[in-house]
Length: 296
Image 1 (tube, rainbow, N blue to C red):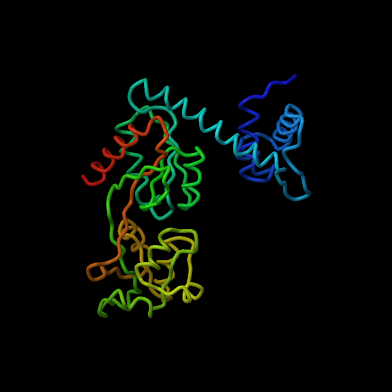
Image 2 (cartoon, one colour):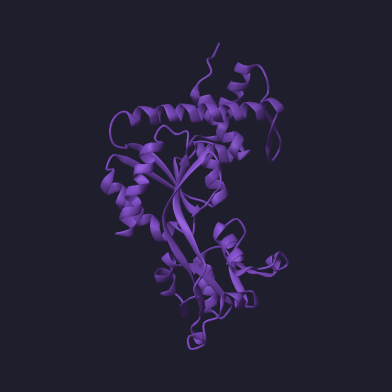
């Protein structure tokens, strides 16, 4: 009888996450027929179907759903065994899967990578950009080790360490440079451009501006901070951007940046990781060093 292997579990986990043979095969770096063969072999080992195969998509059977949850737990435990071994052998080394939110990645990730490469030369840094809900999900399910996000994430299984605070700046068209800076209470009356749903920066901006829920469907949206600034430069509304993005984005459009009156909107950027990770203490040390490095 063919034995159950970690390869079977990893391929099935990919299929359970993507619910599509083609995407799961791509994520697993194998061909679709090879993945299909591995799943069929796994079902034969178990003597039961895990997948309902349709013309365009797949569904997991009731057993498949339960098996996916257990598989995820097994894979996370195996990954943490590897982390435990690395923790006993000196400084942090080996793969480090770092998630970063899109409103941080283009502006801060290069500096973070330089710091980590200088202080942890044996680390194999593997950054991944995604919105906060996906990063939190991937952390809790063991597909990421650390994530650089806006705090708090309020997930009990994750430890949070703040690195720094930053202000949100108001972006207006250059033609408004001589006009008075609006008060925060004036923003709900202005044509405000925000990121599309799913970005925590959008939620923070809505909260800071005290926009009523009834207006959320009328807000103009963009897919990135760059898009928002370009739209403002074209004369379409105003927007808010984090201070770290100001220097990069303001160079590319005819806009003017303003600090809002105190207390203006701000956010806290920090690192999060699983409390159960054997390297949790090392990650706390890494976060403390990164906090000093970024403020220096």
